[in-house]
Length: 54
Image: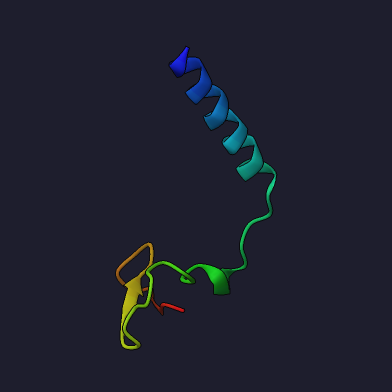
């Protein structure tokens, strides 16, 4: 029973995520960490992409 409830909840969350629009690129590094230092940089999908957290 618990497995069925979890599967249902995950399926509902997945459908909601699929229906939602993608974030614009400028939001990719927003709210990654709580209260990051101002100098903190976050690496993107490869070594050449770095962004400041917001």
